[in-house]
Length: 216
Image (tube, rainbow, N blue to C red; front, top):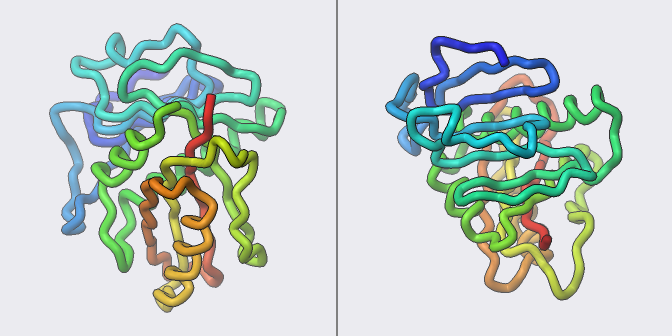
């Protein structure tokens, strides 16, 4: 794993396939930039070894550790550690693209201003609301307006979801409300849903991605 002298910033991404690590800054609800901190707020790990321990990699354990794993990966999860599993049996390259896309969407939600305020505490609250600590991630094409989540069962509906709605400068709050309703209807009646928004001027069509809980 490549060491980086700036790994004490808020968001750290480690790719164990490429043996790389880097960090990025994040914003708070007031859109103030946080370039560094005394601890790692979120650690995103791609294909980490099953015996990897965040407590051994940092002076203080990260506030949140998100492990992006392959379909067959089963692991025990420590406190504040959450698994995001790719349900498709992809090859190494496609799996890495899937994980990098998911991480890009989540970091956009925390670093790009939108019409609603989102910060790390919002993501943490959603993650802590799912008892299994296990999640799936789905990105919807612009033509798919059903926003149907996959692999749901009636007796194990998600208790938490973190959705990211991105669009250009003309982001529609009416469409945002419609997406919020369609996703919430698929969750447990006591579920926690947070909808983050990102305004990306270069983006021509609205896009939606959802991180949502699943049972063991």
